[in-house]
Length: 258
Image (cartoon, rainbow, N blue to C red; front, side, top):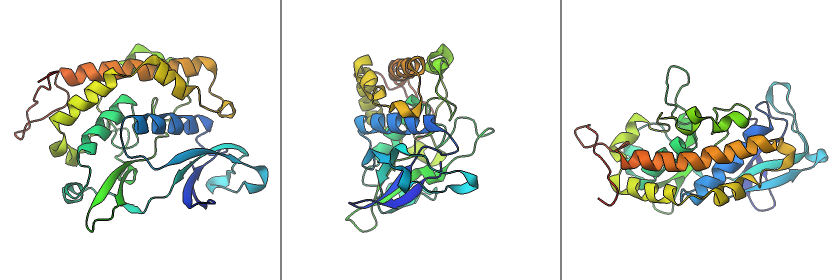
C-alpha cells in the first residue's frame, strides 16, 4: 500500500493514497471495513478522507508514486505490534474485543490478520495493534488495516455477491492464542448486533466511497449485498455454536437467549 506516516495540522497519521500498488479498490475496502468496525463497537483509530493535492504527492517504494485525489488517513496512536503471546492479551483493558475482532474479521472476510488457510497466506501479527493506555502495563486492542477485506485484496466486482462468498464458512482472524479468550457472552452481543444490520445502513456506508476510487455501481451493489447477507449468515452460525469453546477444547453451543 505504501502506507506513509505523515504530519497533519493536528497530529501524526498514516496516509494511504491513490497510486499505491494495490490499486484504488484497496482504499475502498479500507474505508468501508473501518467504518463497519467502528459501527461494530471496535476501537478504531480516528480516520478521515483527505484530498491529496498534486503538489503534495510523493514517491512510493518500488517505483510507484502517489496520485492526487481522495486518500485515507488514520490518526497515529502510540502503542506496539502484538508479539503473539497470551500474556500480552491478558493485559488488555478490552479483552472481550478479541472475540469481537474475530467475529468482525469473519463477517468482512479479512484474510490479512489470521487467514483461514495458512497454506496460502501467513498470519499477520503486525495487524494486531496494542495501543498504550494511561495505566502502566495495560494496553488496548485496536482494529487496524482492512485493505484485504471482502475478496482477499482483489478488485471489487459484481462477483462479491456470489453465494460462495456470502456463505463462506471459513473462520477469519482466529489466532490460536485468541481461542482461550473467546467469550460466549460477547458472541451473543455480536450475534444481536449483526442481526440489527439493515441494507439501508450498509448502503449508506458504501455510498460514501469516493468515485475517484473507481468502484463501479454493480460492484458497489454486490459489496453491499455481501456485507448485509453475511451479517445474517454469521449471526445464524453463532446461534448454531460457532465458534465458542469450553476449557477442554470442545465446542459449546451459544444458543440465542441462553
